Length: 146
Length: 146
DNA sequence: TAAGATTGAGGATTCAATCTTT
DNA sequence: AAAGATTGAATCCTCAATCTTA
Image 1 (tube, each protein chain N blue to C red):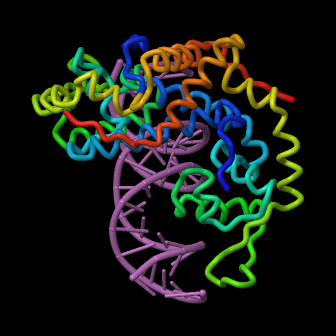
Image 2 (cartoon, helix red, strand yellow):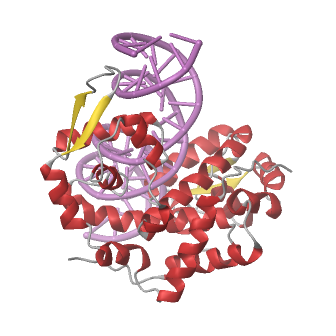
């Protein structure tokens, strides 16, 4: 039943490859109650505090997704939210010591990289990254049509 | 707040690029009540009938995911399920005329490709596809560890 | 009215548990 | 027991609606 990926459209290749790496990564991060999606939240907060709206922009997801992620990350103890001193609509989201600690455990670049680029050569990896950056760089947002 | 993707680990690049393309693709497929995930089901069935377990193997998702997708695709009228004549545990999943019709509307390779590789050059596209195929080809399934 | 955030509804995905048939 | 399929619970993600504050 298995088709030949060589003939798949690029979008399907992209989704399949991403899911595969996410599954591996999630299985590893589970021991810290983290996921491939929640880890980048801590990575962003490690550099600076942010409002949830800012986090959404940095992660390129909706504010609704951020809302749900930060609730869980706060329950787990990896971040803390307090009201903004001047604008009571905002939450100031801050990473906790526990969050920094887990990030330090996980952020070994070699380990992280291995999950995505397991048996690949440096040339293959460079090739892949270049292609992915080209997809992300496409700011045109084209809507095709027959 | 926006970080430099150039410095992201490859796994994060992969997820971000996949989500971006899926969003575009989903917005387009919505008019047929399809999604980036359900379209490949029809593509597989267009060639041959299958059990749900076989579909799961072909799509590289769990049987549970297939179970939910085929329920919806059957409600929409794009496929049909009947009991297997010799093994009553199985469902034989068949594409309907409506399913074939929608597939014909959508399967223009140029249109499909444009969603993923919008403003990219042929060289960039080839580069990306090679990298993605390398990720998918990695049958080792390595679990890294510090 | 805008901005910031939350909740509701629904699809995609997973693991775990269950049910029927082999 | 194993195979095929379903349902439950959870996270990720979206759009739509709502609530509070500016």
